[in-house]
Image (cartoon, rainbow, N blue to C red; front, side, top):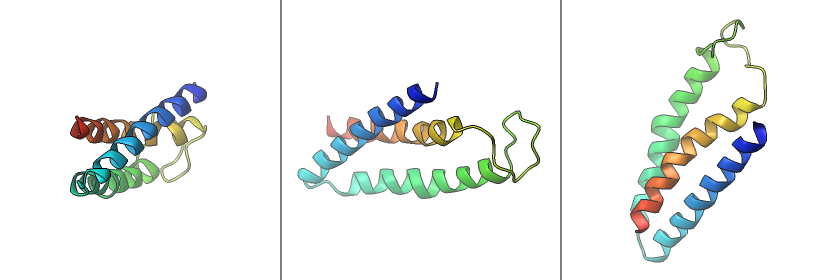
Amino acid sequence: MLLAAGAAFQLFDGIQTAATGALRGVGDTRTPMLCHFTAYWIIGLPLGYWLCFFARNGRSRPLGRPQPGADHDWHRPTRGLAPRSLRTFAQTM
């Protein structure tokens, strides 16, 4: 399961990097900037804070404690990277 999450992360990260580079090459730097700003600061930071300190994820651990398992370290960034990379890729078409 962890290998599949890492593979998905690599796939979407490659799409996002190539699409961002293509857009920069044609002179469109605004679209990648808006996509990354929205994904990291508007969505990612508050969501990460909430997941870290308030979400229980169905486990019986006290709030504010780290959730066990390395799968969370790969699934959460992949869920944020996938829509951002597809949006940036769609802009290149």
